Image 1: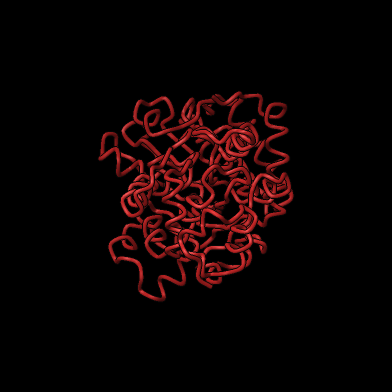
Image 2: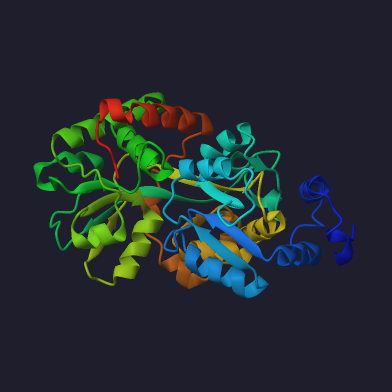
Length: 367
């Protein structure tokens, strides 16, 4: 199937959507590139430049295709991304996101709410069925595990497991990297803490809430969203966050302060993040080209450079497609040997429990 560039402008949005989800002729094609360039801009949201190597990835995309990238609210959580789509349904301006990058449980929620549209990238068949919506509404792209990011200039005895965080020496020291009432990273942090105390996934969310309630009562929990700046300043000397964010902070801070990243001995929870295109995207073709880039060999290498495990990791390792340098910078494989990948149902149930009961059980407003 070949489409002349002059015909692109004549295609309806519905026709493009059908073509994009049924034919690889559109994926990674000159026609898609031309259509994306004609739109001239891409609105992304919640892509902090230190997160998963997104800064260099965005810059490489702009350089390759000459498309402006408007970076909305870099520190937004997954819930904020869905709200941004809802708030801009009738807005085709710069505040309307074209794509979202959300925790796995938010993908089905966005689909059910009619907030996203289907699209299957050219590398679709290499992505595990468990990591994508069969109709292409959302697609898993990378994962990491929850770890402890520790300022060792201030914390002399580095915690090695969740139970350690309850000790008196960590008074006013432990923070989450988001608001557990809306941010996936924080929600998964609560879930992981709970899973360290129970082998029953159905009880992990409640157990996690109890853990943070105890942490708060002991005075160890800091109700501040932990970031590299607050870690360095000493406001949040221990942050619970994805390993790739913690490792990126370690590099960026360059020893000032010294940072140690610890994958806990128990409750090792792996979190998969998914990509999707807004149903109301003002630049739908630029959005499709962005996804094509992320799932290409080049984009997957960019994610690995940011310490994320790309969804095509196993396939690309077997094909020797990653640089040796990027593989060597990852923590030892043994640290990930106990990683648990919660199912969609488990994540959905945990999200429901944690977001709705945090205020009642823990009573700490994270800001």
